[in-house]
Image 1 (cartoon, rainbow, N blue to C red):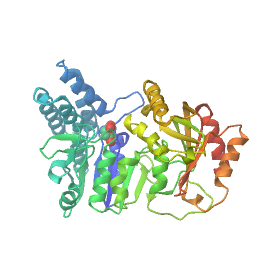
Image 2 (spheres, helix red, strand yellow):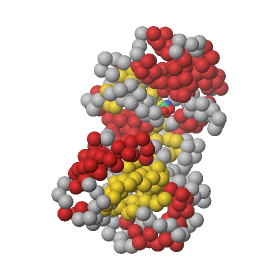
Image 3 (cartoon, rainbow, N blue to C red):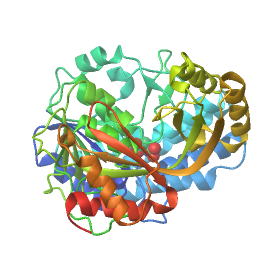
Length: 454
Ligand code: ASP
């Protein structure tokens, strides 16, 4: 059995929905279909989820919601009309939205907001089920409430209650035909609607794939595959990644590969379900397969990612290496300030701590520096900003001499100076820090060195 998830751009209008149905019906193994809310029809358009957020905000303020309400209903009505689905489904959606809106006075704003946001996927799933019926194919809408998708944690940032896996698995143990399942939300133990973070339909798909032990989790989006470099930096990149491992995906996603959030697919990764990223607009393309292991050609890499806006806390002290507890006290300072760190390259008498820029805003900088001076009495401490982290990723680098040398040579050949290097013992990636202004040149040089192009 395959679980397939279709993102908002795949469901933005009737033409896209027709493609989705063609894809689902082309393979009888595609039995669980997770849907997002309708996304943008063109670059200037607004996603239904964003329309719903604006609608909920207006309602919370007690202002007139007629126009925004109409804009949401119109998105579904347009699809229903083009697909000749009849008025009933549009009326059902309208009534549902009205019922939700009427709860504004009785719910806390955060709970009300989630109730409204969740309607985007919920109503879309109902509409998609009707669209299948109109094609003469039976597809059943399934509700996260009835199937036991129980969430905990704050509204808008909820997580799955792990006990749900057993309930979900039972709910899907015996079903025929195709199930259309709304992504992005579930219910708390006391029956309140709660949503995952934005983009959360990926999480729903991943959870269901794990719960039913799917053969594959197909994630349909609007790109043919994951590319080895960001096509915005290297537009000539043509060949996508055919297979990568979970570890490679994690390392690339960490440094900004935006196909989906790595955290979203944790349930599928833990259950070792292969993930297939595919394009709704080009369904014959095999896409990118992400799995536990793959055949690796030694000396090759899978991708190069670059993430901006890092900063580096540099601490120097003569004989630091002999001072027991130096590292612990340094990290304690960060812990006290609630700052998590990313990398910790070190020298004999120096220690660098790389953190994300947003974790160490300018407003906190002085306080952190003073605390380090007080606790560690260093010879020098400073914060360097505007650093880009390059991640060179590939299982094939393990035990292959010269990979780092190749990267450094490529950077040297375009006059880029490396400010830090870090490689973990897993040898699935290494990190190189450079100045932010060199980012594009650096990525292009690395792409040329490792992929022989650009
Ligand atoms: N519709 C939600 C969002 O825009 C969830 C999703 O599409 O995955 O964030």
